Image (cartoon, rainbow, N blue to C red):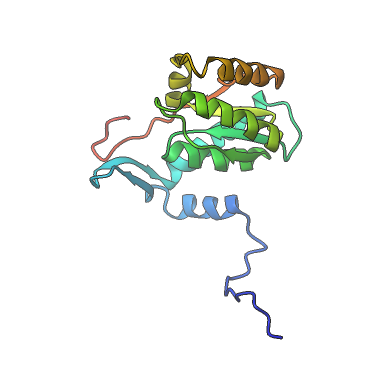
Length: 184
């Protein structure tokens, strides 16, 4: 019987890791654009060069290593809005020796369901810490309980406290210049 698995022709890069490749491009073309994020109408929201991205990853990785007391391979929950910050956080977790576990972003319309889901993700992933962007932290701080969700929210809050995690322990805010040179 023939092998049903697809054959992928991927070059062997066993001698290069992700950060060696990033460092190569930072050295080769530091000011070239690495990422451009657009809104729904195609307008540029954020742009970042190889150098900017590498510096942000290094800075966050150092911060994570200095604030999270855990062994290599420990899981860190990442709750970020879509954009550069979540990508930076994933790379930084990897560089710091942690495993980033991304969650769905929190919105103003789903706080209670999000909290309930986070409880299960924390339990299932056995995360030791949680990092979130400033937008997520602000939404969470301004979360107002609904009468029908009050009992479920209290149970979720108690479960999160049992995990001994401070949901705002690590926040990431990057200064990214838009295409006109102003900071976002």
